[in-house]
Image 1 (cartoon, rainbow, N blue to C red):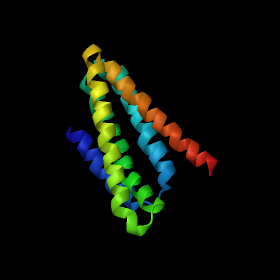
Image 2 (image 1 turned 45 degrees about the vertical axis):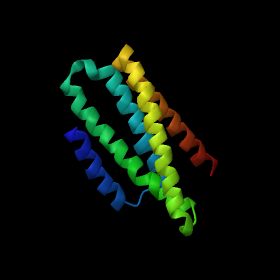
Image 3 (image 1 turned 45 degrees about the horizontal axis):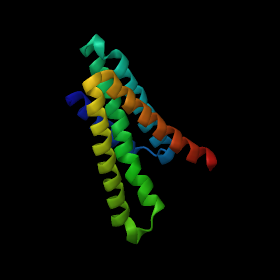
Image 4 (image 1 turned 180 degrees about the horizontal axis):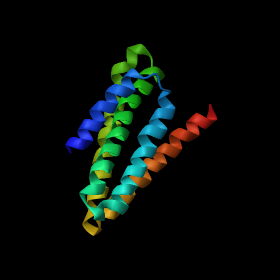
Length: 138
């Protein structure tokens, strides 16, 4: 948990300082990296801590990206007087997603931890493809 939080806070700071394209960074550094890290958890966890620590670090990078770029994108898409509502919708969407995703993952985990992480990897990949389709449409 410390490795994950350390990577997340470090890269959140770095991403906040760099001038990166928000949508591309969200797609590639956030959703695609999360998909790959989750796939790694599903396939490599049986090897123990030697894989869990690096994967936790990589997942921290992905979370740092989503936590940095999602609010930035929302703030650029909505009018200034609607910032509060926009961030509220973002928080509500995140909360619903976390609840539903963790519920499904909990059921899948009862069958096999690999299924839970494969589900997470698939959902992150779908998110990546959705954002990529928006980028390619521009």
